Length: 93
Image (tube, rainbow, N blue to C red; front, side, top):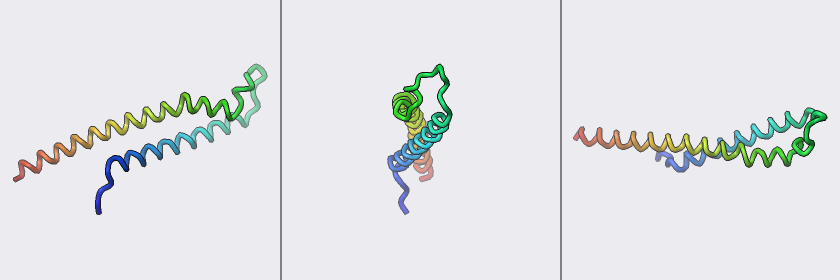
């Protein structure tokens, strides 16, 4: 059986991270909007639309940057492991 390519695994990992972030957004926003807004709060901030904009502008880029950082480290470690394995096999001949 052929091993999956790094790009396939990276895409799967990014999609899982996005799905987790979306689930976290839904649960957090539902809990926040379930309580009535305080009397001194701005009412526009207590809507699904505003919360979605804040998520897309603030939290989603943070998640994507975190995933990119993790994938970069994984890629560099994979390249180092492959180079180490190739050098090790060459000396065995």
